Length: 492
Length: 145
Image 1 (cartoon, rainbow over the protein chains, first blue to last red):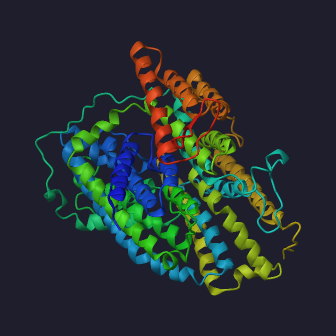
Image 2: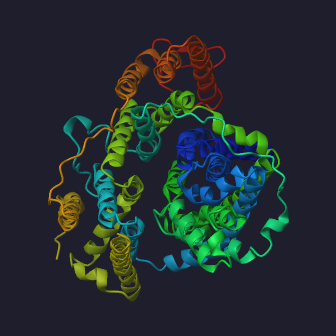
Image 3: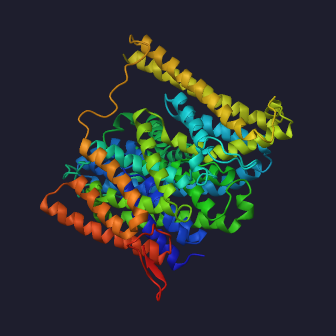
């Protein structure tokens, strides 16, 4: 049921998301993480409306500063700057923004269709999984993140396993014995560190430390880009771009399905493909709608894609959907193969809310774009103190009011800041942190059932398929790394 | 073969993970060291500076100290008052002590915590840190934390 409350929550979510997305340095993940505590007060459906709206808004808002000031608002709009900014400089700012918004909308809708079609199929395949396959799928999730963290494979896998280790600092559910927990914290850590403080710490607080170090004096001056030029937006900009739109959206969706792959990888790949297939590859990068379309449809394609593994396997496709997992947990719903059959109603809500969010995003951005684009002038130095306050509220409320979780928030903030310094990808750490408990449980279940024999992991054909995927993902990473190095060597 | 013994099974996976981490760490050191040697450098890199050049000491350490102070006092004094004080301090730290800056900081510091306090604590009934400055209106059944 669509109610007035849900619509209002949806509009609020999209607008707040756009603000977070449009201010460089603040991301969709941050938007969802910071506002998650609000959902404690809502029922699951309204909560989903809010979170999905924040997600779609956050991904879409990034195109505004990318086009107007050549700074991507979110990592996934890096490629938007390539063609968007040159257009704005020529005085086609409004046209560029509108091409971006329409492409975002199309990307969102195509990925929604993919979500609707493929999640049930993947779920029913996953229903046949025993604990052995479930364990292997998580292992695959950990290797595939790494395989795609460009040239950082080892660090990516390392971060993932470190996340697993940190999340295991708790009392083991089978024999209630503590491990890796100092004696004085035993009363607080029977179920380990909570996800929410970890997540807000890594993705919001760490960012604030980083900017404090840089002096927090980032300011958007009046730019040389112009909104009203002679060349206006018209649907003709999309003439001959149908294939580009669909291809880029599907690339975004597919990259979204792979765990831990951010929007930047998706839009870079889509942009490269658009260039490969373009009739005029030399024009890309000089300010043509073609590149803009590829970039923006692919990064919004991510939204639906990232929900596919989340809902069918219980594995988050990116750091933002990782926050959605905790929203489900808070409402007592287990995502995984049984999710759709057991929660048909919630599943429908997700589809409707995602569709509505995309439509709201389009309406809120397309018509008042001149007004909306002023967001980029909001100084972050004024927003961060308030964000710190909201983060503390969120962390405190995680387990109904514990100051321990607020300290954990600060600690994870510092850890996230240090990760940035030593080039450990925080998103890989987070995926490991989320999946660690399941990884352990399925492992112990599998070997217990087999009387301790590790051969159980090679005993079933479905397992072999996943092994092949794991090995292929590592092999791909090594091959990709070598290729990059050769290219670099050749360039020198 | 791994023997699953009830009394010690809580250590099986953490130990394996630690082992994997050690192996990965060695692999990182070796591959990156070899790459440096190949590029004409030495196997071990001199650790670079942790902070960026000319980093803003006041804002960085100020953020950390204010953060610790904020958490430390929040459940003793109560959410609303503590937040007003610290949101003001954070604002002054980040934007400076110019006259206009101070006025804007004070306005944000009064409005934002009140808004959040009422929205989360009263309207949505979410537990906020309570302390000596929290007031419960028994007759009306709500608390300003």
